[in-house]
Structures are given as C-alpha cells and as structure tokens.
Length: 312
Image 1: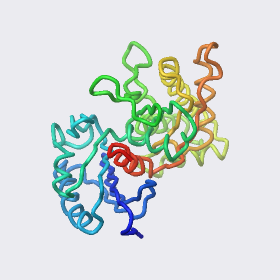
Image 2: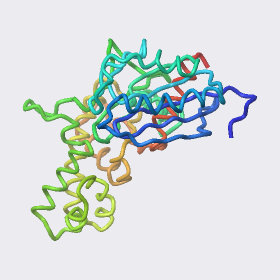
Image 3: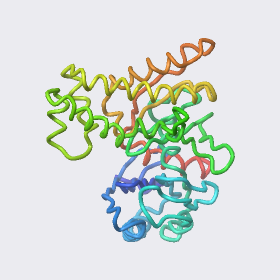
Image 4: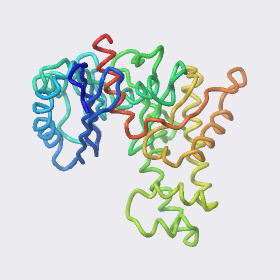
C-alpha cells in the first residue's frame, strides 16, 4: 500500500513482449505493480495507448515525484528520445520522456533496459558490494550494462554496453547469435532432431517455441544432450565476457534474463569458461552471479534511475 506521507516514484519497463508499471518509495521498494502483455502487431502505438490509459489516473492518485523508464532498445538517455526498437515498430525518434511527462506531470528519465537492470542489480540486487558491476541479460536478445560507482556508464553517445553484438569470430557470429534465448531454442531443436531419444528432445517435441526453458529440467536428469548445449552456450558467453573483463575489469558479472532461470549450472559453466579466457595477470577474474531481482530487475532499476537522476 502506498503511504501518502512519503514521496512516490514510478518505474516503467517497455520491452518487446512485456509492459510493466511499478509504483515505489524512496528505497525503490515496489509497492504496486501493473502488467500487460504486448501485442507486437499493434506496434508502438498499441503500447502508447496502454500507457495513455493507465498513467494519468495513476499520476492523479499517486502524484509521483519522478518517473524512470527502462526501454528495450537504443535511446538518447540525456533527452529521453528513442532511437529505435529492434522488436516493435513505430518507436524511432519518439520523444518518450517528454510524452510521459505530459501524461504524469512529473520529470521523466529514460535509459536502455539493460542499463536500467544493471543499475537495479548493482544497487539492490546481486551486485551489491561489487564495483564495477556488469550485467548481461540473456533473453530474446542479449544486452548489457555497466555500473561504475553506483552510476550507469555510458561512454560516448549513444553509449550502450552492447555485449550482444560483440563478435566471436571474423565470420560475423555474435554473442547474441549464439547465446540469446532464440539461439538456444534453435540449438535444442536441431539437437533434438538428431538425438530423438534424449530427455531434452522428448520434451522439445511437445512445444513449438521457447525450448530453452526446458534446459533446467533436462540438466537435473543428467541429460548429456542438455549438458552439451549448456557448455557450448557458456563457452561462447564466457569468451564474449572475457573482452568485458579485459577492458573494464568488473568485480562481478550478473547473469539475468530468461536463460538465467537455468540457474546454478549456467552460472558455474559461464564462470568456468570465463576463467579459461581471462589472462593470468587478472586471475581469477570477476565473480559470476545469478540475478537476484529476476523479473523485477528493470522496474526496480527504473525506480532507482528516477531517484538517482532526481538527485536522491
């Protein structure tokens, strides 16, 4: 329940499949939550209609001191204007911060969703006590964020930590093309066709998408096929993260996104691979941890962003 005596903030997550609005307090605790599935076919306009229906009423009731937004795509974080979305059409060059500010009457701060999630994990999640903190989200795509001294590191504009687009070889293979949820889905489908008797293959035949979510159960059954896919994915991710390690030397790397629900087997395999690719002078390298905030990483990070940018 919102306490009217204390300042209230809104944190918004705008992704390719999910829209969340969370109300929170000055400790970035989530006190109320509103969630919608996104109909990608309706484009950005469909998402804006949902926000336009919900935000004025919320703002009238809660009077938020500020609003933070984690957006699923490149943004101009200084102005809150969207560059584009790679998943939902109709966002290019849209002035999101000023548009939401008109709906709420509050200052609005926008950043890339992976940056925002990194901030949430650094300040309230698995990265607490570490500095710098690097966060990688393993979902439909692969994104990253670096937090240094409690602040998102942007670098020169547009300043996103695009770990997903780091190349793994000269042919053009990227971390995203090998380690995203969709990439793992494809690996499982191909492996299941060749190894039809494996537990993972039998489970994969029962669904038409999202096969990566079957990995945890298959690993618990000691399925060699699941183990091989996990090790291949962790090997590629560890190699990509070795570049982050050699350049930025994070104290901790946090794994988030849907693939992180594979849990400890993924964390241990990535940490093992990363240590193999880290030069001896930097051994043992950063600690690898699983997300502590899980699905709340972006909205909680958005609340933290609003507080930080407002000066609290």
